[in-house]
Length: 460
Image (tube, rainbow, N blue to C red; front, side, top):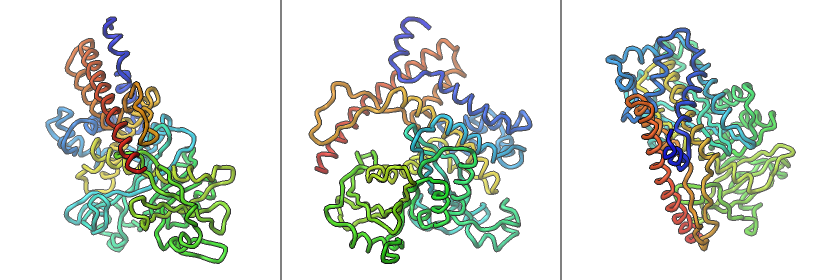
């Protein structure tokens, strides 16, 4: 590399070789799970295709991207090839946790759906999904996100199949679920995922989830047994144990939280600025359990409730619990990135095993991008944001951290350059694209700073 190229490289935020290095690391994790060379090569091509800029990511489009004239190899990879998808899931978790592990890590549980037509796809049925915001014909899956100060990504996922499927063994057999299929609730699936994660030796300090998971005493009890704190959302009618007996969450809030107990705190950064609410804690019958209440600034009657458990020796400060409540947003970001960047919901597979194999390969692609973004964030942290609406602009705004979407775009560019150009020319082109990315992210940092300042001024 010339002196000019050295200077140019120093102006960018990330080493171009890191993209291929981490892809090779993911490939090395997955390779032992394949007994034959052909399906292993198809899996690598499948993950590369998921990282490409394709409008739809199914077997046909992924095969075309890999330069194949037929989709048979990709279809066979999902449907018939011999490889261990459970082992692949564990490999993705190892890779993600190895790079993202940090004190205060959180497991976040949530579900997402994909609209489907017909009745043949495994798990399909009329059910509510947040993807559409209504009841529709869809498949729904429960996922687990590992989130820490270094980053977050999906590490586990399984299909939620409604109870009426278990009453039709022949239909289950045709969908690949097996005639002995038994119904599992969403919380039972989440509990299995939590057990697998802890059995793998993953260090976790907290758990979080929405009302579906907050209602499960078994799931809450599991984390208490393992001295893991939690902040689970609960409904307005959730029965909280108090010194005078069970009491609904809304009644406990009205009777036990005085006006002076509310504190205005941010539970994290959002697209429009800090997510600021009024927060308060209500004591319960146990010294380690509390009811955390969130109140909207725009409408004080709009309340949200969280049931919390803090193990002995861990901080019970309100600000710490608010932070855990806010980190639940990580799984929503993973759903958005998974669907937009790596085609998590693009599968056209009907059988259960094919669906699982697509999902685990999509999680591998997402974990790769999350790790690359995390490494960039560690080397170049996000710039400091304004503390209030009167803050003076800094001398240097810095640049926003590399996002998963931007990492995918750069990976696609670098792969194409290395494939089509000599190494020296490809390196210069890669440095140019990284410089352009850094320039754009510096301007985004400036825009974000002023946008947040306006938002904070409006809250004052």
